[in-house]
Length: 194
Image (tube, rainbow, N blue to C red; front, side, top):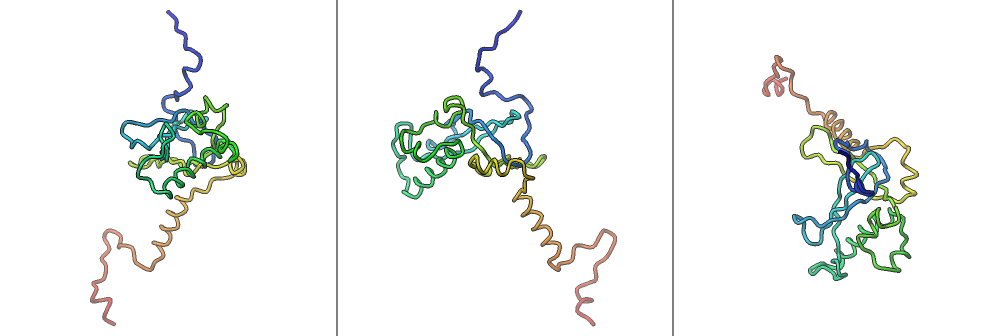
């Protein structure tokens, strides 16, 4: 017996075991935007798929509902901030401000399958393997120009750089490390005498 997979059936499916890529800049397809029942009504999960099949989502907090009404209770600075976050993703997809001003923007504007095949560009940091609670992160959405300028460069992970700097600062702060096992420290009184 045989089977037939219809065209497009694999569009929102990733291979089992697809691992996060190394830290760096990547082109991604936005494959789905959803409001999960566990999320607040104004929150959307933006699912991004990398070329190697790895898929993840980032949260997007919306200022307007499906009918174009502003969510109640938002202050103007919250509305502007949420629109700025959405605009950053849209610019990453290659839209211009003129395009955004000329028509309504909806989920179909984000989706690779309905936006004419536009990809977004991201700065990505994978979670630490073996560390519970360490998740892969899209640090930021970037424009195609930023992606092109950085995609082939060695990625300088700012989180790792801060951790290394903190570790070296801790080692050179003048505080002695504990004595190795089997070695006794002098008593505090010995340090004060003579």
